[in-house]
Amino acid sequence: MSVRSLAILFASLTLLLGAPGARAQERPVILVGIDGFRADYLDRGVTPTLSRLAAEGVRAEGGMRPSFPSVTFPNFYTLVTGLHPDRHGLVYNMMRDPDLPDRTFTLRDRAEVMDRVWYDAAEPIWVSAEKAGLRTATLFWPGSEAAIGGVRPTYWLPFEQTVPSLARVNILLGWFTLPIEERPRLATLYFDIVDSAGHRYGPGAPETDAALTEVDAAVAALLAGLEARGIEADLVIVADHGMAPVSGERVVFLDDRIDVSAVRGSTEGPVAGLDPLPGREAEVEAALLGAGEHMACWRKAEIPERLAYGRNPRVPAIVCLAETGWLIGSRARTDPANIRGGAHGYDNAAPEMRALFIGHGPSFAPGTRLTEMDSVDVQPLLGRLLGLTVPAGDGRAQDTAHIVR
Image 1: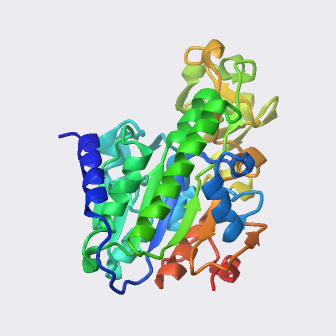
Image 2: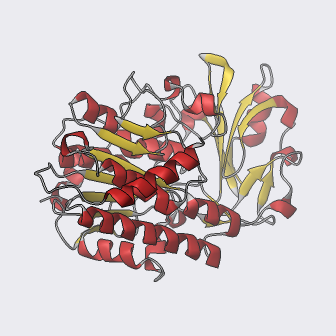
């Protein structure tokens, strides 16, 4: 039976089981991740449930600043470790490691995604909780499929993109329908449809609004399911990054500046990572380094300090960052006629990259607004909600202390 079939069966059983008898339970923390939910999507009038939670609880005004590069796996791992990608080791959605010369991490390679070697430089919140004796459940959260530090969540499933949003909610509710002593104290839930729609159609498209409406309805179902079970939970709802519109008319071609055969390329798009071949370093650097039209390139050790990036051995020797809305490519791999929709990965200070943050529940001070928040601040906040001492990271617990009562 496929993961999708199991998930839907589990969801159906969950609905049939209904609410358990009322018994005392420590308040659970549920971390909801909505991939690609740009902060200002909340103001479009298509997310009544999320907008209500933001109004009643805590909202990051103007959005939460993601870590650079503003892409999925690095930022979802930052949210649960409190470390910038340069420190936790997931430096991009595709990367190489000099200590693993014959391997490449990509999101499509299930064996690599599930191998702890890529994640072991940091400790995510579910590992901290499990080590402290708390049960955890992770549903599709990036990184949660690996036995990080040899520790897995109590409950988890391998990622299956075809599982519908509502089925994901019901799987999570199933874990909260277990006997009281078996329920998770920390649970994570992941949705990817907003990001998929933003990439395919663009951040301003009606299809993206439809994806927002679907996720909002799924969150409403989560709230209803918790209420039916008599469970009062603290919800932390976050995104990893925003989205910017792109066009085939806004492409910087590396071929116009360098001989692309002189580099081993890692990535293209908003960020290009390049490793010059031995003996070609001076040639490539002379052509690329510095600010150019619609992109800037640096040696990894000279990347601006505010980006907190470039010291990890997995970062390529040269990193180029496109102007927001532009893409970096090569003519052999990039066809402008096929470029449409949206992209992310840009400067994390760009408004288009700002991500959603909502805190809602009994532990949060109602009607509170955060004017400055970074993705590294989420892990210490989760630790405080759970009563855990978590590994020190790049975030500061005092920055969010006033939002918890």
